[in-house]
Structure formats: C-alpha cells, structure tokens
Image (cartoon, rainbow, N blue to C red):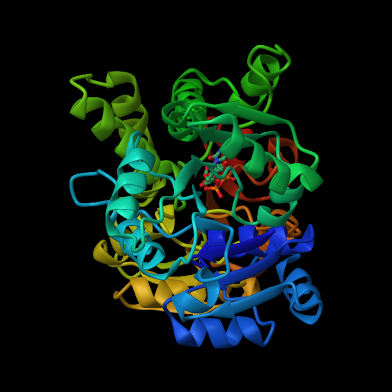
Length: 439
Ligand code: UDX
C-alpha cells in the first residue's frame, strides 16, 4: 500500500517507520526541512531505542522517504495518516490548528479518493469534522473516507509498543474502510477492535485517563501510608495480585508527566464539560498529580528550614527514563522552586539537558556525570529513575556529598539497602530512614 504520514513527531515518525518495516511504501511529510534532511540521512530526530536501525534499513530498501513537499507524498497516496500534534490550549482543550492545516494540505494535494486516518489524539467528534472539512476543500469532486486509529505507544519503548501492542483500535463509518486499515496492520499480528468513530476516539482518552487515575490513586495511598507508617510498595504489591486490579501503573512517585497524560486528562475534563458533564473524578486525579509534583520540595523545606545557599543535586530531568522528553516533567516545577528558595542547583541527566536548557531560564549547572552533581552537595533530589541512578552504589552519596541526605521521588532504592547505609533517606509512601533514629 502507498501511504503518506503527515507529521514526524513521536507518533508520526514511529508509525511511518513501522509501516515501512512491514512492507508498505511510506512517505513521511513534515513542514520542517531541517528535520526532513536529517531523517533522509538516517538520523532520528527523537531519541527512541531501535528507531535508528529501522529508519536506515527502510531508507536503504527504498520503502521509506521523507519530504517537506506535501504534493510529493500525497499525490500517489492511497491512505494518508494524520499524526501531527494536538497541544493543550490555555483553557485545557486540545488545539486542532495543526490537524486543520494537515487537512487543508491533504485536500489541496490528493489526486484520488483516499482514506484519511487520524492517529493524533483528537477530541471526540473531530474525525467527522475533519472528514467534512477535507471534503469541502477538495477539487474535482474527490471525496475522502475517514478512520480513527488512535496510538497507544509509550515514549522510550515506542518501537517495541508498535510491534507488540495490546490492541489496534480502528473506528470507521463502513466495513470496507475499516477492512483496508485492518489489512494494512495485519502483519503486526496484534488483536484488532473495529468500532464506530466516536467510540474509537473515546477509547484513547479513556485509556489515558484511567492510567492517570491509577497513578494518582496509588500516589494518594502513598501519602496516607506515609502518615500511618505503612509502605506503599507492599500495599501496591498486595493490590496488584488481584487480577481485577493488576500490578501495572501502581508505582508511587512524584506524579505523571509527559506529552499525553497531563494534556489528555485536561482535554477530557473540557470535553465532558462541553457536554454538560462535570468530570469530578478526573479533576481530582489532576489535582492530586499537581500536588504530588511539589511534595519533595515540602519535605526539603521541612528538613532544612532554609535552603538558601545550599547545593542541591538534582538527578534526572526527563519525565521518565529512556527519553529526552521533558514535557510536563516534575523537574520543570521543582527546579525553579529550588532556585527561588535560594538553592544552588546542579542537575544531572544523560540525554535531556539540551531540551531542559531550552525550557528553563533559571541559573542551573548541568552535567552528564552523576558524580560531578553529587560532589559537595548538601542534598540530592531524585526526579527520574534512570538505570544509572537506580544502579548507583549507595556508598557514593556518603563519599561525595557534604552530608548524605537524599529525597527520592521515584523510590529507586530498597529500604533494606538504604537502612544499611549512612544515608538520610526520604522517599514516597515509605517510612523515612534517618540513621540516628535507627541507632
Ligand atoms: C502514555 C501511555 O502509556 C501511552 O499508552 C499513550 O499512548 C501516551 O501516554 P508515555 O507518556 O510515553 O505514555 O509514558 P508512560 O510510560 O505511560 O508514563 C507516563 C507517566 O506516568 C510518567 O511520568 C511515569 O513516570 C508515570 N508513571 C507511570 C508513574 O508515576 N507510575 C506508574 O506506575 C507508571
């Protein structure tokens, strides 16, 4: 099948590359010529394990190409995927300006009746709106069909998730259209759910909202555990054995971030509101997450009273490991607050420093060496559970820091190992370990 993919962000790039890997001829279109030239040389524009090899393999095989000229990709396409961003507007709703631009580009450049597949996460009802919008702007009576095919990949494991996903959801108006999209995806050998368009759109928002709810729920349990002296990890383990609950997404921490959960939960609250439904449960999930992001700061203030002039080592900037993405990372909330309180911040991350520098304009020293960050630090704050941080020999804190005081927002270390070290240790939902108290 000849496929065009508009947008080479996380979703578009991984989708285009994966579709070429299973044998389709794919042209990825992006308005940024610098990105396009980089991708045509086989250099990925995002950090994603396994992606580089697949791009190079399929470029060489002639099944994959990148262009910034819409007509090059669209004139010959049989199916066109829209995979552009739907960023959050100031009122929390999804901004559709890039989807609308892609729709206009499709209308102006297709030469036949194509199927347009919307991969971007769009408010319920958008597929119909975009179908009508394109059909109003096409020439020579061309009429497109629309299909919703939401994406469930996670950053950092996007390639693996695409080839080993739990399900492929296809929302279409008629079985012929759904059948074409099912046939395109057949080589992935992943269970397919064919449904109506509105339900497909809703599945994406509901899935992300449910996962965010699981995280905020366990974070609230963690906060209660702390007050009562229980250990949230034991609680989550005990809950997870129940197959109706399941063990995944019950890891307490300093809150969810990234490009999807914060944006999609806000958008679903908005969407519900537009239909006169007050989604109180999801509003609370969002509130819990916002509070969770500043929890460690409160613990630091409690411990030190005043951190003016103190050197604070921040370990991790990315919103989670294995990505250089810092969107909605707790680091963006915590570092400015630490600086505001007068701390001298030195921040470690293996790959997310450049993105952070573009976003944060407060005085921070950056390093890709953990030991450099820890040297002479008065306290350490762990924001991202990078393997490099989790696998640290705990003696390093005592060896390098002025005093080994660690605030761990990701519960990286077992309480047993911490208790055998001289570290003063505060984590999330677990008893603190304070050496003089242990005796
Ligand atoms: C998420 C969804 O998982 C994916 O299906 C969807 O397509 C896009 O949004 P992603 O944002 O890449 O993917 O990351 P994910 O691994 O789901 O983690 C999201 C956030 O939740 C991270 O900040 C992570 O640290 C946090 N998290 C996750 C927890 O705090 N606890 C958990 O148990 C799991």
